[in-house]
Structures are given as C-alpha cells and as structure tokens.
Length: 104
Image (cartoon, rainbow, N blue to C red; front, side):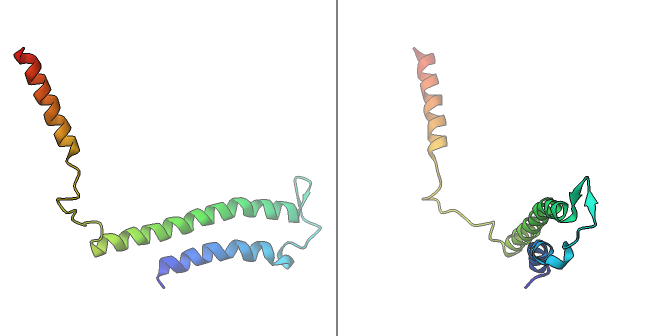
C-alpha cells in the first residue's frame, strides 16, 4: 500500500461518508438561497466528488507511470520481424516512380 493509493482511497471514501452520514445534514434551520441545507449539501458534494475522483485518478496514474519508468517497462525492444517496414517501402516506391517519370 503506497501513500498515493491511500490518498486515492480517502478521495473515494470521503464523498460516501459525507453524503451517507445523515446527522451531518439533518438540519432545517440552515438555508442558502432559499434552499434547505440538505439540498445544497447534496449539490455541493456532486462537484466536490467530481474533483476528488479526478484527484484520485491523477495520483494513481502518476504513481503507475513513475513505477513503469523506474522499472524500465517503457523501453521494451521490438523484434525486427514485428517492426513495420511498410512506410519505408512506400517511400522507396514513390522515389522510384518519380525517377522513372523523369527518365521518360
């Protein structure tokens, strides 16, 4: 368990706790723009959850990329038989056709 994974887990769990723990928003007296606390609390967490999910994705993705770079997994050699030589063949054919056109 890495620190990045712990941060991501907190970012994922926090919205559930904030929205599902009813005593936090079980109030009638607070209002914002004429709406009861319950409604704007839920709406607030829609935006906050989107931000936290984005942060969790960014942290985990950055950790994975760093781990791949450190292990050298990004530097995989491709065998000669697998490499695509078609672009070179097409360029050679175009050059040859152009030379034949000049000769006529």
